[in-house]
Image (cartoon, rainbow, N blue to C red):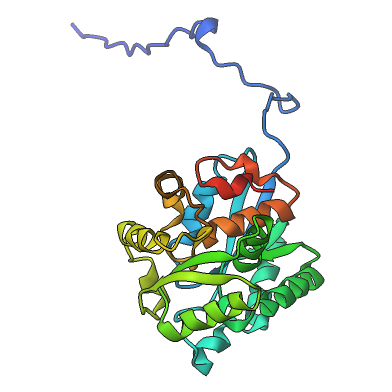
Length: 274
């Protein structure tokens, strides 16, 4: 007697229609609350590790806004010919052209080099960027200076990681604008990568020291410092506005892009200044 084995194939029952996820046809229009995209192009020193995460965090609360970055070589801050040569316009313009490929609405140099090179360098750079790309441009320092003018600031406190000779150049350039640096602190560092290693608590202590001179504003003048996050707490404590140069770049970029900087919340009073 033989045994016949029968292979039985189990066929799953079709899922209930109620469990199926409807897939909209390709032509369906999905609801959205996004406003017109605002793309900000940011020129970044190659050795900088602070400004990119800070800039992205600042703009995160602005509907439809994003930041896009392009780097060029900057590794030290000093007054030597080699160090000053890092800021040759040709290198910066090449980086700006890469941002233009992303069709950004504005381009900003998030660096403070005109503080010791002279403010006219940034004005010329912005004009060259507009000529080369057709995109409006700003810089950390030009935006800072505009903010100082908006509030008629003539007494400024300056906190940087730089060496003494670089610091003095910055002080002298602000004196040429009729702005007195009434208190300053600097850390004597020249390697750009090391600036980001300065702990925020150390920066806060330096700013508190400068506050004794009762400046109208304090600037943390370097875009590789982790200082922007300190603005709200510092302003509550000292009742002195903090104008950090990562933040001033964003303020200037939003204005250049035709957006309102007041959309930025939680990063200091300056974003509401007009």
